Image 1 (cartoon, rainbow, N blue to C red):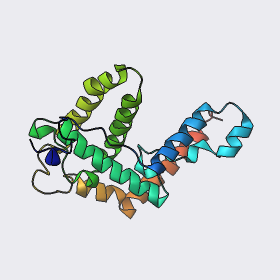
Image 2 (spheres, rainbow, N blue to C red):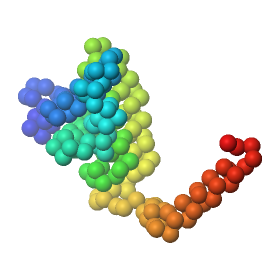
Image 3 (spheres, helix red, strand yellow):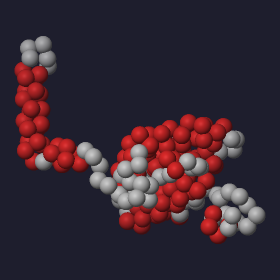
Image 4 (cartoon, rainbow, N blue to C red):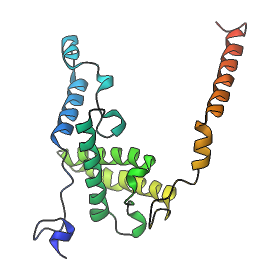
Length: 192
């Protein structure tokens, strides 16, 4: 096999898992520090941990350069999984993965778990990733997408329902029901 096509070095049959960039390294370091904080002064230096970006969840990465780095890393992870871990066509992640929010949410977690497993000092975490994490993700992907996007991206079959759910009249009807239910519950004599 041509090593230029596989992405591996000459004489090597496997590729390294994609490395994170500098901004992602800083985000991970900040999260590690937030988890290790023992003193209030340290917490004030770092700021609120709730607002820290989590690289496995692109929606939490608001700084544009970090968010771009996360997207590029996830793209490399998809290429790595397809080239290094998928054998059957059904296991391949489609090229339109980034247009499937359910895949994006899961890929971030799968990638983060693999990154952490690869950094461990023993192989137990990597074995668990290979045995449980990746196969479970691929099975869910097969169930959700099947061969839908085999040749080109297709909108989700439930798109009409999603749009109806978000429509103004639907939102207003739910909010009115919530208000009514809360009013009835708080008016109940046994409730405070």
